[in-house]
Image 1: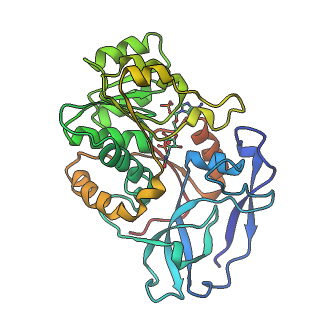
Image 2: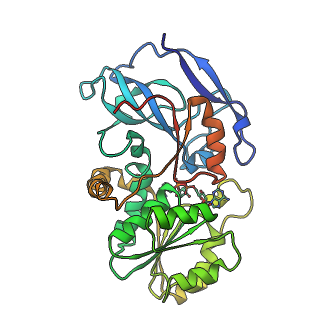
Image 3: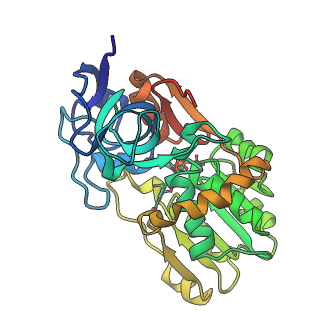
Length: 337
Ligand SMILES: NC(=O)c1ccc[n+]([C@@H]2O[C@H](COP(=O)([O-])OP(=O)(O)OC[C@H]3O[C@@H](n4cnc5c(N)ncnc54)[C@H](OP(=O)(O)O)[C@@H]3O)[C@@H](O)[C@H]2O)c1
């Protein structure tokens, strides 16, 4: 017999959400697909930094879930029953199921994905929202090309790792910044960046400067002020900065980060704020570019997976603390692709 489970919010998180703020419990199986919707089986759940902010009502105006509510979040899932002519049982979709094994979802929010060279869960990472974010920042905002010196932090993660690989494939020198020796090794040895600096070691700024030669022409920011401030003096004139994420500030109740206005003028720097929602209608363009790169081994999919829905709270806490390597996911059910 098929049984359903979900993870709910036990109490509103005070600051950084912790595994103990959540509870896995049995729940009713959806009776079937909603009108014009789908009944789906979750294969993998995406663990994304924005969810920490969302749980505290700090993400793009979305309300915080109330205690007792199922945790929100996107998943890759298999269609079991469809009440929509555009979907058939056996199709695979990325959709917001929340944290559960089985969900009834509107077809309008479901995006069909095709099994291919990668595990289907790659559509939550390199071939999904994080990969699209990287592509948009690198190619549409900073317009990276040959001769650029491209620097990105959180370089072992889904966004940073993909951004550096895209930049390198487009002819730039890719330099990563990452927290810890294992992450730095992943960035250079597996992702193939030209260099990576572990910012948890003394003298990282000097090593970054040396790795960048004349200085970065493009910097892609995922972390916040502690990285951005020391980067500024290293930038070449007319550098482009993509502000993508501020992971170190999401769970801090301190002052918001401040940009050094003087150096922006002195460097004649251009700054681009990036919101991936602006680029969702171009996801197919990114997947078409990424697919041959994956086949040629020039774009690596690296996942950090925990097993089973009940592991989601602990995996989420690990991800929020930056203890994962690559794209953090939870494998909920078998990938039969
Ligand atoms: N603008 C957009 O539309 C958009 C879309 C998707 C993602 N993002 C942002 O892009 C960034 C990367 O996303 P991702 O999914 O690839 O995540 P990720 O890089 O896998 O995880 C975030 C990383 O931030 C770093 N970090 C530094 N200080 C931290 C702190 N105090 N707390 C937590 N993490 C800290 C950690 O890497 P190190 O240990 O290497 O420092 C951590 O692994 C995030 O800021 C995310 O919010 C933005």
